[in-house]
Image 1 (cartoon, helix red, strand yellow):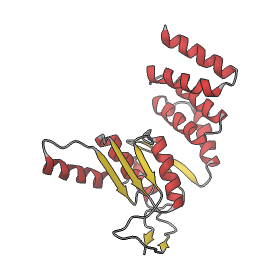
Image 2 (cartoon, helix red, strand yellow):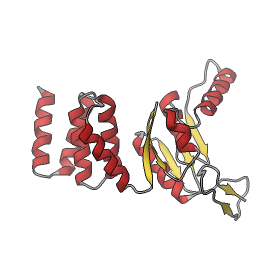
Image 3 (cartoon, rainbow, N blue to C red):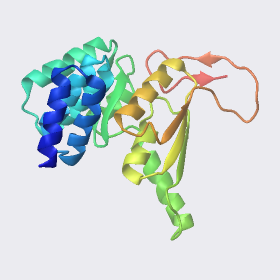
Image 4 (tube, rainbow, N blue to C red):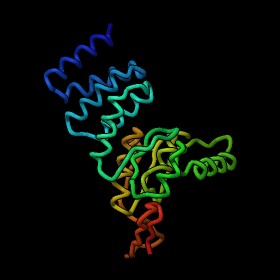
Length: 219
């Protein structure tokens, strides 16, 4: 059996701590058997071994979605979130998001599992479909002031856009944005740009909100 042979090969690489070979082999196993929690757990272990805590968290979250009753794994996820510092993972209908614990608006809004920005994206897509029917295809999604990527991730997951660009000025938000694109598996489809966007070039002052990280203003 091809899957069994691949799994044995991945275990051999892991025993030898050849993580550069173990990870792609484990991912191949996961792609062949996406509902097998064991592969997700082994991928998480491999990512931890190479120091990639964020991707390890992603693998653990998926494993817990498939099989919630894994208390040891939940403890590991809690430790990872603590390691990530002032950030935590929030679960939504389109997958997990890394959020800042300082944010009292976006993080709280997603507490019920609904992605922040869902209504706006759904409304915009509906209008475009109506105006362009029947020829419209969700090609490019441009997110200006992308914050941590909630709109971009939802647009791709729910509406199937082909490619996109997410533009965010504030560096802390931009770092979380890039993490969320990775968590969603769309970092290869969305170009993240760390800058502000205006109708004209120039300089401005950035006002930072202490509790709503989506309410920073460029003056």
